[in-house]
Length: 276
Image (cartoon, rainbow, N blue to C red; front, side, top):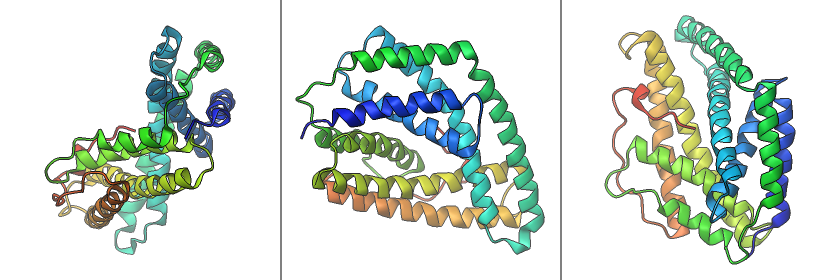
């Protein structure tokens, strides 16, 4: 099943569009769209081009730096929304304090993001994007479905499940989904994309709550010090179990190695990886 070349070109078009918008607007949706299409182009060049050119390597480095800065803003947007919707009447004071702290950090991260998007750098990224698009060559023999399925098997998951391994599956699942989407609108591709999206959503939900809990622990201390921390820890544990379940279902459907018995959450959520 060959790649849909139109879909690969669309990722470049979308990224160029959102790249031009981001210096003027760091609204949640703008940041989210830039981050999404940046990763799609990174997957195209990093996973599917057998021998990236000097321009493509430089572009990948620039995009990775921008995406990480945008990711820090996006993560805070998600956490602010989670906290806003959390019912916690017994910890209203803690909740309001954490909301202010997250909003302040978001403002700081937004300034850093916009500072990084100076005119000269944005023009360079745009120029390298256009060149990479013109020179893009994906071998016709590559099969997106096979490549996407293989990306999950690259995660070393022998032994009990841990937070770190689960996080690795989160990242691998994103890359696999973006590759699978390039197979086009076929039943096989749609089924795989749906399976990977379910896994990505389940693990991503856990990771968002984990980061929110880490922020609360940093501000308030342990569960003995704050009822909000205790509540968030309980939610995060439940999300972790659900994420492991969804991962197991996905791997079984794809014929990958089964997920082994899960391990308890670490004592401090702040120790978890926060790479995006």
